[in-house]
Image 1 (tube, rainbow, N blue to C red):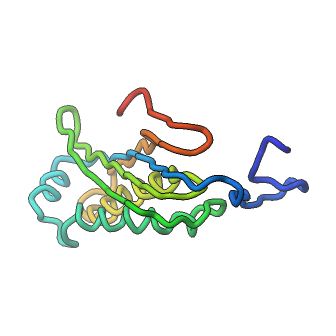
Image 2 (cartoon, rainbow, N blue to C red):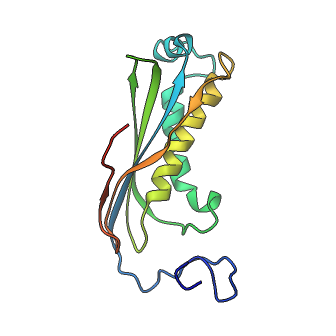
Image 3 (cartoon, one colour):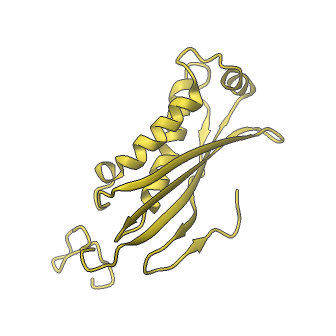
Length: 162
């Protein structure tokens, strides 16, 4: 089991020891999306959702999600995040789809990919929660890593951008 760093000698889960890894600048960008019907798109963009400003609340949820990643994902280390930024943009050519990007940065000894993925997911889930009274058939996803910088494994850039 030596190639699996999240297992101890007994084959049981453990948190990886990162104490000997150098502290470096690390960042990650993740994306997600949610497809909605036209009436939900119009209600969100015109500010007609009774629960409030959907994108403002989703932005806060994304930031909170990034900060709470180690609480939600058992083997993630708690990290001091130096930056979390959530952005939104609509594509309406083929369907009404809200794209979400979550950028996370830290100086630490482990990466922030999971924080970025959690932030994008939390933002998408919040949009669903705030709009579900209008439509329960909204579809979230895919959610994916777009890029990451820093760390032992080097930089990663997704070849195709959905």
